[in-house]
Length: 222
Image 1: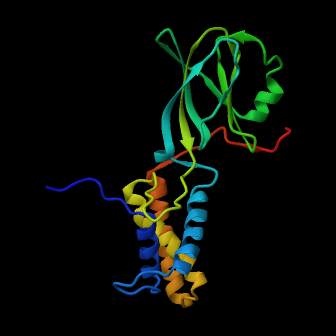
Image 2: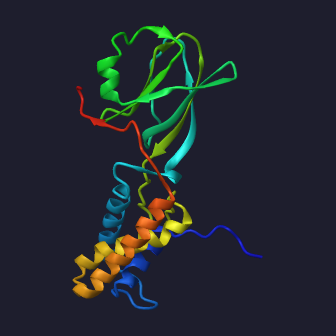
Image 3: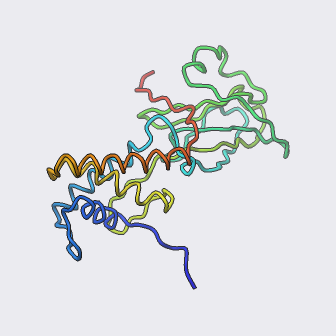
């Protein structure tokens, strides 16, 4: 009987990438220095894996409890955007609009007016990410959104990330393409690795793509 628990750990990804570029042979283990360098590049890679957009597996259905008289709500750690909001009041669901933060600042003149929220916005800043609703809720309710999460760091040897198992080899080849520069791999082999990595990434991205909305970054004060 088979199982469903296979996933690539941080060290397995690193070892596979080093094997792909020929730095490690069969049965060899990477040195501490090799792991340190590869880990730095791996975390940089996954943080920039889909800059400006979102992959569908990074979105999680999220419920935010609205409080009468309260307009702003702290986003959970790791949330970098929201999508598809709707309001639930007395078990009735109503879609509401999603607007970017500059429009919220410039077009909503009275940000204290109370009523039934009809719009929501997301502000991403160094001080912490925040979700705003307008009008300010006059009664309690629930805001439902698709919360888009940043990809988690991989800091420890046995760490397994949130990306789907099918993305394991995409990450391996993208990391191999980066490491091929560091290890002076010959240009022809390096180009072949880069082409394969990009083809795998683009296919995976097209299969798992949604538009990321409401994710502008602002420095305080705005």
